[in-house]
Image (tube, rainbow, N blue to C red; front, side, top):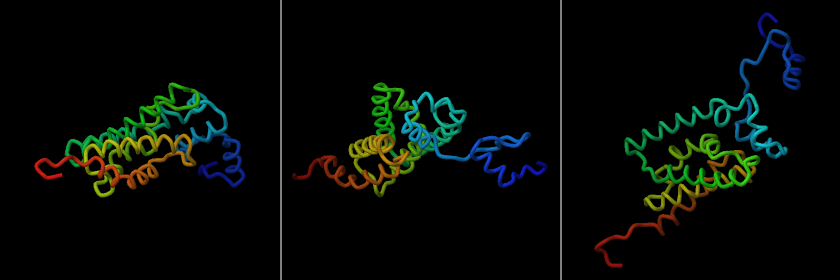
Length: 196
């Protein structure tokens, strides 16, 4: 094929069989996120090791996704360095996500993915540094920020494992946004010198 354009039947053949006419190969592949692939394959009774044997699997998760997460981490570190955000929400979110996923990973590593996969896949990094730290809808007290971030991390894992969506960052943040006033009320610091 001189211009690398496939006919309709060749396209159908490539889609359903994965075979191209001779001399052609994949230029790029677009598809679901690694979280969706893991969730789908685990639902089909495949093991985590089977999913990781895919040629689209990178060092930790999907090829290239870990580098994107590292870029978000670097951006988040810059926000911390500039004191635009505090460390409380991102650290507690990522720590809670890592701890809960570690517990389940050590229980059954053939069904539950590693904590590094959870932290470096999907929207965990962007959620920790750029979404959950929104000053308008998150907690204002430092102790409240710790509970707020930890709640988001736990909800992300719960939604990823047992929910209907492969990634649960948006829903976890929205749910904890509703709890932010409650957390602020019960974690507000004591005012010294004022009558109680």
